[in-house]
Image (tube, rainbow, N blue to C red; front, side, top):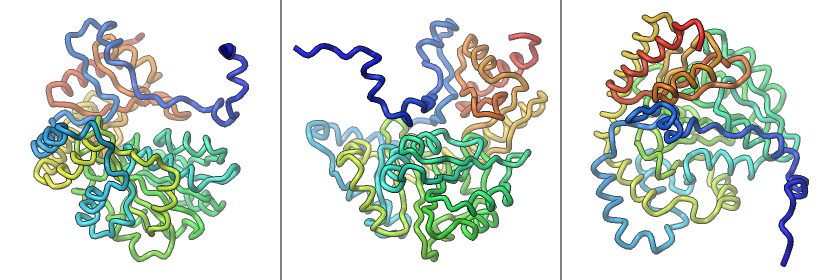
Length: 380
């Protein structure tokens, strides 16, 4: 019988790039917050989940698929879903790649493209996996800060892109701020990004922003360019399928998709997720209603928080980036005692901010009251 390795022995096997990585922060555990607060129901605002329920078409598709779907592997190519997405967007299906959420495609891109020492450029504040996945591969990451009002700093981006990155991650709308890159700003990014770099536009929250006339149609802007690019989207956010984990990418060419297929696991999107995504894509009325209700709440809650003296970044998503004026960890813990979960932002330079995804109007009113009371206290 082989002896169990001591912790020190197993630790010595871990690559140094992995050993030094920060952990991904999913937010506090709802059961722990419930026990701490004694609240009958925890208000979870940490993960950008949609509170309005499933599309009836999705619920029916999942119900019909469960009869024999769990005993068989899903289609490894996701043909039905890629064809539905391709038809919806006017893109050949062979230029679409599926992922276990769009973050899975971020990981695949880094595995397929990056060598140790390669440069990756992304934004700050930003989505942590835009930094973590490149660092796993031994790449260097340069983060370009936003302007003081969380806008696009054209000069800073131009200088960073001139350094010759191999991969560029740019979220539009930005996670965690909710700010958008306008058509003109996107045009400057495209002009400044070297043609040798792979440009990755992460549009996980794009459905919420599309009603904004300033929000660019990235696919239209990219179609005519003879350069490598990929646009990432997901069914986890506006479509409300976070628990099923299905995202997709629209690539500049089929060769890039084939490269990603070589490094992904063959069954990375399960059968219920594929069925649900096809149904969700077809229920445009449910999507439109979700986006409408979300945008109304974003405007209403932003007004309430600003009226209470808090700084709130203008958001084109379903979440708000809020400056609490004190350490975000302390504010988050105080809210836990009230049965509310938000994400404390720990990125250097933004440690007083929290990100809160909105829920129903009733839940949001409780959040506004508890947050303003918390921030008004002398000590937490």
